[in-house]
Image 1 (cartoon, rainbow, N blue to C red):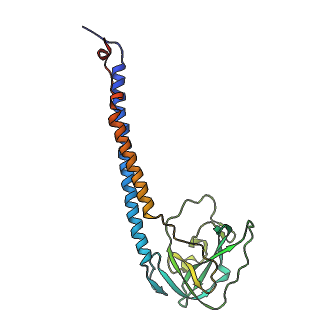
Image 2: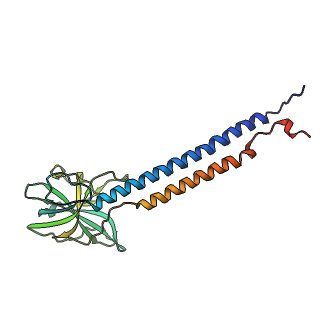
Length: 237
């Protein structure tokens, strides 16, 4: 009878099992992330199509869809102006001007009026605001999820991101969102564009993840012989 005191075969079996488990996880992860990116590409295609077909609305009486072109009539409230901090346009540092507009029905609309350069200075810019009735045209952005903010959002009249709650009378805003002004009275230089990653980039990411999964599958299969445990008698002459 031949006996073996070495525990190497048992360790080899464990390594062999670990080999298959680890590479299988990589394959599943790559396939899953690829499918997720492909789904995101389809969602972006639908979103961009919705923006292209967004309606032109005049004084809407219900919440406008994201991307809608809106024409508003009313009066600016210059005393309620805030500044969206740390904006950049064509290499210039500045702020975006945020001024509520009150329409004839008494509803408030937050108007992002455009970019004003300030340079490295922290003082609030002195901006002109039309007095009396104005007409404003722009693109509607629905308030949605925002990136995490570390620290206070408001410092004086400056905001790090747009939040309707930054105004004391936030309940007077007609709908949860704001208008990026493109024309009309009181507009400054436009700087905002919808932040939408093109579908083609998501598709490229999907292909990369799938190629990673295929490479992992090949590595798992062709490298299995090196990971296979060798029993003691297989080393005997």
